[in-house]
Image (cartoon, rainbow, N blue to C red):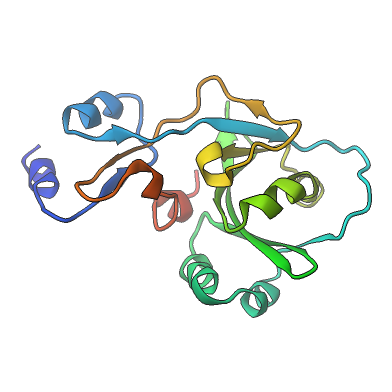
Length: 191
């Protein structure tokens, strides 16, 4: 506890606990951590035929590296070799949406993809059906899980989870809407 209090006593740091176990949540609350809004949708991967679209999906690292620029390219390079992050690029004509997801287990079933980052929520909404089909046929993923705060727009045919996983943070300078899933245990530790 002394080590924890010393860590929490440091000024100017933002601390996150994006995967607290049930027993840790009350302790975090007593230590001043706040809850993030983790309202989550489940986007099923339906193997139904879809109308041809102009959306292309690629997981090719060379293409991702070639297409992304600026901040998005830096985020990709920072996360390209992390153990849990998987990367996709959705393109439609000149628009691009860079997506980071992780394989996830629910009810001990490893058939979910949790969306951790979306660079263009508008294009993600349009391409979410294509992406879910891609993940189904390429990786056996039956559904995507996405926090509304990450994807902004709730896709059609998505279902709200009644009890999403909790996430917490403690900061003197950042607000909840400034906290994301990047540079965290979620991209580094597969489970």
